[in-house]
Structures are given as structure tokens and as C-alpha cells.
Length: 97
Image (cartoon, rainbow, N blue to C red):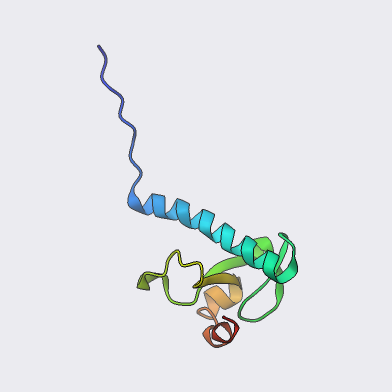
């Protein structure tokens, strides 16, 4: 008899990253449909400008490290400038949600 093969277990961080990719795509799709009725374009919740789907991030209103990682209400489509370089552009974001 041969050795039983065991499945390699995913680390928690790799499972979380895989879930985030799916959740991020869903958030951006939801917000694109809500703002432009299209899956190709969407508005940034902070600055209001329209961007191609691939140029949008799923930005958090409250930082991810505060336990808000997969909150449907706390994550919205944001342009990369607002999300990454303006730290979420919080004041306009707050006005929109």
C-alpha cells in the first residue's frame, strides 16, 4: 500500500487574499451598475469621476485593519488616486455614503 496523499492546506492569508479578489470584483461590479448601468464603467464614490472598471479599486471607509475587511456597506468603488494616494479621500466619501 502506498502512502495516503494529503491535500496541501491553504494558509489563512492566501485564503483571505482569494476571498478579497472575489469581494473586490463584486463591489466594483455592484457600484458600476448602480452609477452607470454598465459593467465597463463606474463612478468613484469620493471624487465622482467616471473610470473604466479596471481602473477602480474597492476602497474601505474604515481601515481594513479595524475589522472592516468584507463589509458590504463599508466598501465602495473608488478611483486609484482617491483610494491609494489620498488615503481614501475620506471627507467626500463620508458625504456620499
